[in-house]
Image (cartoon, rainbow, N blue to C red; front, side, top):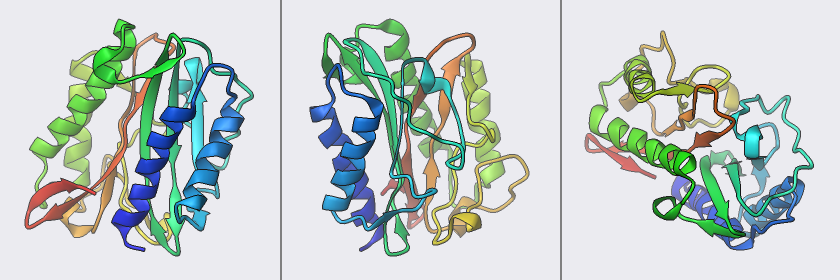
Length: 228
């Protein structure tokens, strides 16, 4: 499989789960549904600590933990809830990496523009904005560190905080997870020197119970940034 094929497994799985999440579903059930669906769609394994779906809901959405320490909680989805799902499908040594924060209101999944909870709506729209700003800012010569400082300055300016437990905003897509380089302070490698990279700001408002995440894989095609 090509990278685009594996990434599409993750994208299709998020669309599938949006149609199948309902109040009363447990996070363990959501994880199982996601992982089963990814295998059905062609994944043969999960590259991040053998976990295919990291699932958080409610005030857990601010949590940022390594896969070594992650356990899926027994939480049950409520009538009005916020859920973050981060998927890590793999086929052979080819990865996908894709995350979305999903909102449920009155028992149904609601797209960002139609969310009535103002705090949640603003969080989702801020995630979209950060991705748009990243795409405007980067060139193949932009370093991982330059992107780190630029996006974190926007996060702070807009009144949000970076929740990532390592403080980074994404990483290169490679064949072995220990070979990843990160969008972090001190990384002088240029974005154009890697084939693909993720952008995945995990943000919240200071003092809020809720966090937001949106992750895509990006690459350069003739110097122009593209989403995989």
